[in-house]
Image (cartoon, rainbow, N blue to C red; front, side):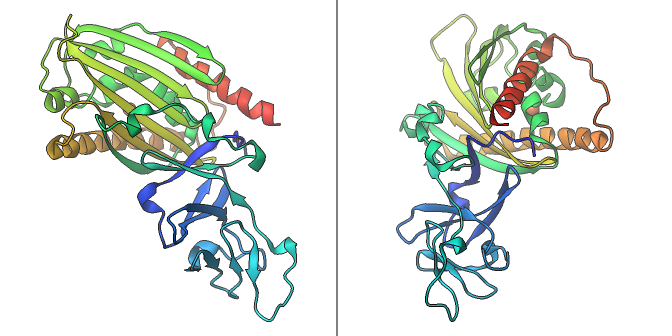
Length: 332
Ligand SMILES: [Fe+2]
């Protein structure tokens, strides 16, 4: 399957990983996630080495996971430490353990060669550790290939049409933007001046039209998307607020994706009503994208080579496609 694997991918939210094994498929690989008794998150190959039963339907015994079929036990490094009636267990029975790092609301798993795993390869997300910021988040399954979500996120002109009444205003689609690529990072910058304030920002910040609205995208291919937002009263720095909209795009297989999203802000921190509002608004926006992209995926089935026409709005998305294709090609 055409995935770039030498990268970190979000496999779950931190809350999803606990003392009950969680099965997930990432880039076509089945993994099982759980927490040791000391709270450390573990990711193992979700397949018993004996007869292939998924370990995610097994149970935890202390820090070990026990297969539900014949009771084989594996420690958090993937070493098979017990099998019924067997004194000496061959090392062939060990299973792969994947490096894990927790950052913000997410559990990231390294899908590549173990020795290359380095948490420093994750983009800086300083706001996640800053007490002056607060984050709401969620995850939605998407019945579409990851590339469709990346196209979507790199071209925010669709906000005007698909997300009218939430984050879309006429100016998003009409304002020119700049694009640049640095290594595996695609930057798309759109600066709107004296424009309409959409409900997402007017109701959460109290700002009203006209506002200056900046959308600075940093897409770290393959799986991490950051949208740095600044909204402020038009022409003023006074009252400027910032939002970091993050998406972790995790391919499940060639036709399914997990759409992890998070919205961090530096205003109304501690205001539970604003938390609830932004969580609801962003989830609805995500569900609008999920519905649209699922329709496109369904139309693509069996018709992969249908032509597309690209426009100026696609400059960022096309750059992202090239970067992704290069990442996959490098691994081949
Ligand atoms: Fe969208």
